[in-house]
View 1 (cartoon, rainbow, N blue to C red):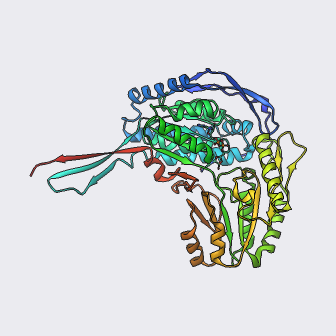
View 2: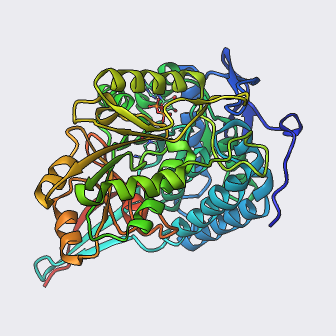
View 3: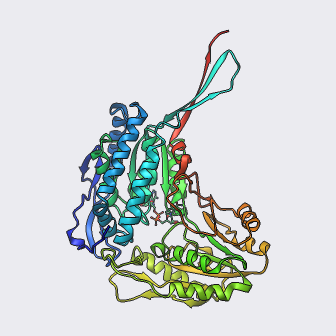
Length: 491
Ligand code: NAD
């Protein structure tokens, strides 16, 4: 597929909420800026508690009357497959909308994000008739059943870094399980999710099953988190917000909450590793979305004897990036989402430098573009207390720490707060597996780093990186509750 440049002004989109299959404009507006040039390009209505209530009520009506949960599950699967096909047919349109307002360059948005969203929806559709429940081994004169049922209306809140993908990870399993969903995208990247919902209706998924409420966290996100009509809540975002969401959810009653939160993932490289491959994986992780990924492998923990060689290889791979507006097909390197986030990176680097960190590469902005772009940055001479090691930077910053033996390497890899992902590079399978056992992380990649299209593998964090899983069978199971049935069948 040839991907062409596009003019940002040429992209049309619906800027309101999407409730019950209709565009709804309600609420005071806030401006939305394009990360590529920081130009305000749209106004976003902020849904207040009444609008959120309207969306939850419409979703509940759709659950009661559309037959989404009660139709034969294979019909649900068929509608979802049709939806995936439509997403693929509209890949360029969706990719442009994603690229327009987010950090995702158009080429990556179309061939990466949108393609993966379509395949992910297809993956989830396949679970529609696979998780009905179990027959339990009870006493012989009884029959025990564990019956899986959808919750009804579930809620979801998503971050800005991969807007379409993050939405699909929530909507796919919720719908396959027979629920309706009310989803709030990030106010920084709100519009592509609405198009995803419109295409769902076009594909035959009943209106009201996939609703989008727009707005910020403190008003809309909070109202959704504490709405008593939301039977289950799924959130992806920072750990700080995750705590607020969990608290608000608990204050309005008891409901399960899935939290996919921040990370500070280690890249543990042993001296026997294929260093060229390790460098490629580590640099790839740092450059992907300019480090604005939850699983960014942002802490290099390397065996001292190969440290200099690996740093040399990394410098080579990180020296050349291709920043540019996300609407140019030649752009390969993402802008930072906002000036506020870029200033946060400035602050963490300044604090780290005051603490003694030595900058081996980068360390500042890439000037000459409208938006905020950051140089890939390598920081040595750091400790566990250095700001860039302690805090999730959410930018292209890699800290470097050396170790002498396995025990020390594993101790350094362990982060006191986060446990989302980890990379291990070694030629010794036994050592790789020992490290896998020891690392307190929800995902461990050995001799590779980053996800594949193997959606069967769930993702989620240990420690303050989260509770529960997105993707995999586990994500669908999390959208089902279980009823126990015991039947006396006589003798
Ligand atoms: P954020 O926490 O600032 O916002 C996430 C979402 O929560 C947004 O939609 C926001 O409007 C909403 N929100 C903010 N305050 C709220 C409140 N009080 N109540 C309810 N909702 C509220 O995060 P972000 O900056 O959008 O995203 C970056 C963060 O997301 C990083 O920490 C990153 O690691 C994390 N993330 C995690 C995963 C994962 O799978 N673990 C994936 C992607 C991103």
